[in-house]
Length: 101
Image (cartoon, rainbow, N blue to C red):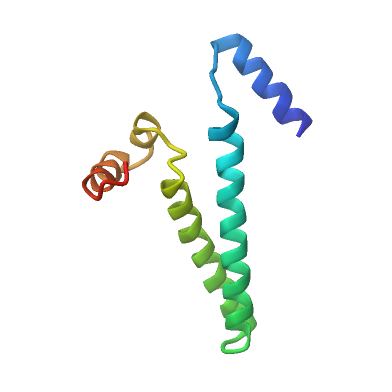
């Protein structure tokens, strides 16, 4: 946390980085909480049905999907940030078509 604070402070001073607390702290933490709860309940549900190792793998895959959906639903990434991702232009066009962005 200390290293993160120092890095953010230096970035803000050096390149005039404008980071909003809500967009870069609150929303991602909320997405992580949603992901954690969903993957936990997925794992608990699956351990009684399938092997523990397979339940872990499935829960991790569910966690990835839930996290991406939460980031999109909370609109953490702007259009410019999304376009910087591999295949971001296509993803943005689909999200715009679905009226999510």
